[in-house]
Image (cartoon, rainbow, N blue to C red; front, side, top):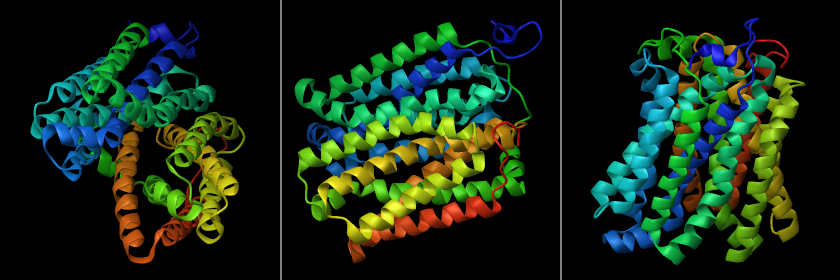
Length: 398
């Protein structure tokens, strides 16, 4: 297969929707595997004879490796067909889950999670640039919304399904099932992805060069603010719902299910809004999220109202990765992969920053303060995007 499989005689790209769906399946497998330990920490720790805190390093290890991989993958693989890389990363996803499922001790389990970090960081970094080549430019937002459906679906199903199946068939069998999902993604990608020869001149210095561009540097600051504000909020949503909203485990699960469903819808809302105005889409989402965080901080406590606000938050956040990935394909068309690596690195840094800062604030001044700070950070992000981030209408390349 070669590039002619996705271009007509006039040279215009034909939408390769099957290939886009295959990548969404890959994302579902990767993100689902990333989330699984959170719902299985107790049985994993008990069987391996370690504390839950030590078992929790399975999550930390994956995020740290994904961050490093996102910054290196485009330079290391600059001469290799992108189809080969993506298929290889799906193979690594399968091997990771098999290693975890068979691990007799924590060190070998962490080896499996390191492999997942490489697959996760690499796949995410290449995803936006790949989608950009699979469909015409005007359909990129729609294609990215399909890609991020895999993320929302993993968020919606991985944790509750992992917890339920872990009790039913054991945590090792759950990771074997995750390996099976990886096989499905691999087969689909092998059948649907066309050959995608590398583009650009990505080297180790390219990341620095791209980041030094004023438009990119400012945008990465905005991205870091948006995702830090989100993860400070989302990491501590359960204790908020339990102590402020005062709902039990069933209530928490129901509210988070509402968040997940709304988040899935937000992917498509983002694509719809991007076809009309990129600046509006990038700005309104953190503005809505920040306003909700401040409202929950100051007036939370009503179950129905809190559940509604959390759902609207999910709807708004669902549009965020779609919007920023689209921005990257238009603002940095010559080095989309390198910019994608910076995007993935910023998200992983935000996960660590938001969770760590939120934990410190939670321990010192309480959960309401976490949401207040989260809201303030998101409002600052919205103002930054509105005033200094360079955007173009969705119908024009940036």
